[in-house]
Image 1 (cartoon, one colour):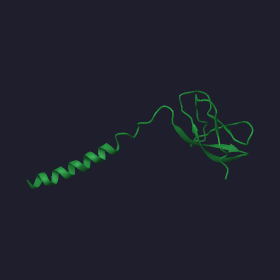
Image 2 (cartoon, helix red, strand yellow):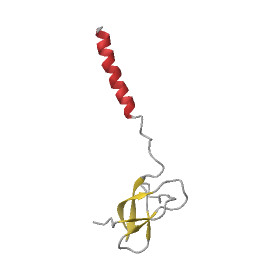
Image 3 (cartoon, one colour):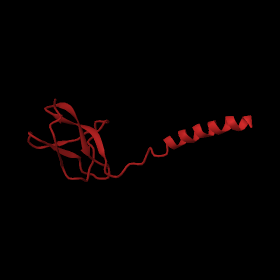
Image 4 (cartoon, helix red, strand yellow):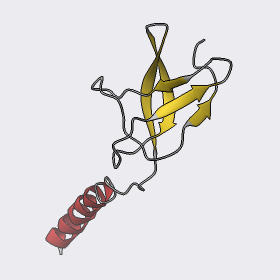
Length: 93
């Protein structure tokens, strides 16, 4: 009976830890990715609707600025997206 009192809580802890890793890769196809854009050579963080299932570069339009800006990822490569160009607020402080 004493071993049962020890084993059950240990099993509960192991089960809880195992479930915490169950949904690590459960994301949808379209999700927002944190990246950055270059404005006048300076990087500014943005959230954009980019996915890597396309060959087109992910682009955003920034309110108050002319043109489209390419969104770069953490590896300094342009992110890819099949979504239309997203209009976002100016990320500069």
